[in-house]
Image (cartoon, rainbow, N blue to C red; front, side):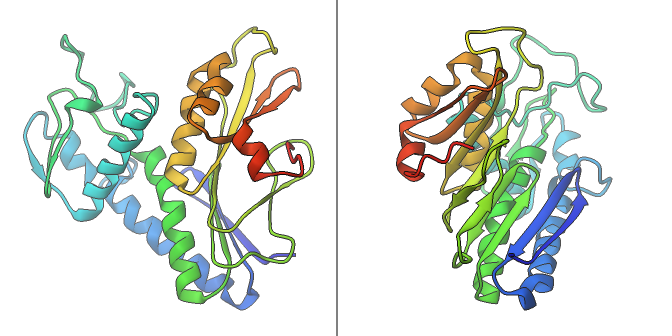
Length: 269
């Protein structure tokens, strides 16, 4: 059995697995330190988080750190790749900095980055929580594997990243009611479910999507984007040549061609 450790932080469960038991504590320390660094930049629940300066700027340019610059750039990339389905702008009217919309309402395309300066239009409120958590999974896995010279699996919420060498039998990941699937080292996986389940469609309603890629942020963004497309999820995933599994509420499971090629033994969980 692969040594593992779990804890809860930033609203998500974090899990670390390593191929060398003696490295588990050090791997967890790397994960905790990296998470703390990212939270200091963009955790909206922290009063000292750097992102508050951007959200309070209301149309004024703000100089920011390289870490926050990278997080905003990553969030904007995910938004562009998904046609805005993954959106770094909060739409919650209850947000303390939320301003009633002025027509035309600003979108993520109105955010500008110039070196260490960011410009967010008046009324814009950034929330990088989801993309930051997803993107950090790769960073932690690669840092821990490189430093500790062992295989590492990192799970933050529903996003998983692997690095280093595989354990005997591979990384076993449960994504459904069936048998776990084997995830190759160097791969990332993310699952997403609809926030509100549709009442009916041809397969009983979309239940969830799982995507495997080489990048944890893209795995998260693609899964979330597919879910936003409802019954068109599988077609969108196939068109983008993504290895993905789509589950429906009545128990049906469909996979893309890329998933079949990646998991040739028919692991559809």
